[in-house]
Length: 239
Ligand SMILES: N[C@@H](CCC(=O)N[C@@H](CS)C(=O)NCC(=O)O)C(=O)O
Image (cartoon, rainbow, N blue to C red; front, side, top):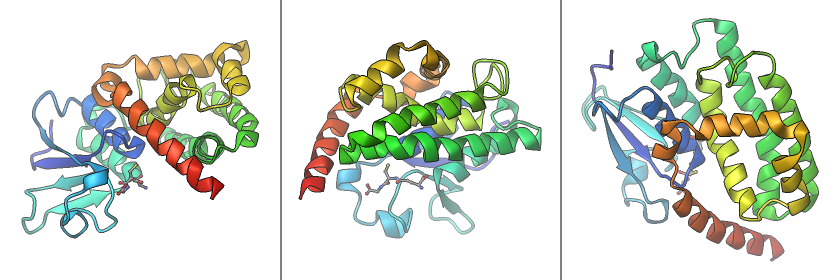
């Protein structure tokens, strides 16, 4: 059953945190059934009243639950919170496992991915710190060991759950931008070809093969925007 209140999502396709939420909304079928309104925000040209009207932190993603501006309506930011909210609003989607231990495992997985993979990945990408690249591979090995705790394609089995959607935007961008040469070649070629990393490659393939991925990821746009942004950030580091 879809929720009975109107829901609006504020998103930006450049943003991996926002993609977590649009992925979840696609997975539960919210777009297909017109159950939500989507507002795309250009982060370089945000509406002047965005912080005051939508999110005081001035960020995407945000879900507005209720009629916009009506008494009692809540504007809820933070992708981790929103992933759980979407899963709970559409419980039949199975995105949120019934077993609290499995839910905790998904949250831990998501957090650990940020710490051991996305940390070094961001250093490599934005600061051009090639010395952080080997720890990216160590992090991926650890992530593989967490994935191996359950059989199946995804973290908890053959269907994706919140933990998978939480990391998917980052896993997808790692390969997309790696192919563009933003990850040092020696490290990216290991990731792309060594048997040791086959489980992570299979995980990436499973995530990006879902219709929800192509519905939320505009590769050409991301490559263009990120190329400009990475160059700019690396230039700033040199100052
Ligand atoms: N912790 C937040 C992070 C969201 C975030 O950093 N969003 C960025 C875009 S990726 C943003 O909206 N930045 C404001 C801006 O660029 O003006 C979450 O998980 O939702």
